[in-house]
Length: 281
Ligand SMILES: [Zn+2]
Image (tube, rainbow, N blue to C red; front, side, top):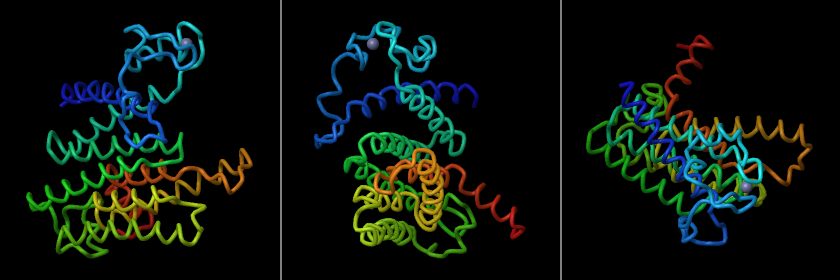
């Protein structure tokens, strides 16, 4: 188990290193997420010097060079080690929770997509359609897998375990995940309508639907609740610290990703802790 975890962690770091390139070379004006820009050797973003092999070792190079370019000494973005380490953690966490299974693979791909999406939304205030489509496709595969392995019922098929049975819709896996997709999509449609498009965008709505399709009902309700709590909390802090105007709101994608991933990996523990805290269990 430890050997597998270590191998997966290093494999995850390499994937993260690739995802960093995908994030940095994303061009919001291009339609394709992975375009021709992906080719070519990596260069320093400040001085343009082509990087040598020992400057491209994930995590290691960043810390050895103390986060600076060896030529121009400008700071290298913290995004590099963060995405690499988080990708490693995602693979290990999926493996420890669900083993070397197809389910673990689909969940890991879902989590990695949310990671990429968070950074792109943070930099460009846009969630690429390609990523929402990919997440929707993963959702379809996840539902088919659950249906085929009969991993659905009163106590199964939800990331919050038996707590899910309280909110119903546990007779049919297809109905359950379809309802969750509708809930995610319609909630944001309502918010866009109410705020006249100044708060949430179409990308958030599509992500709400795609993520709902993947994680099902009532997981999507809790995930979005957590997102709004996190978004409100950090939005309040940034409003207080930087006196940001309400107009230039924080992108919501990273908070949605955080809420969803908290439910996927810790949903049962969060519910359990909540009910224990209020002595309801
Ligand atoms: Zn440089």
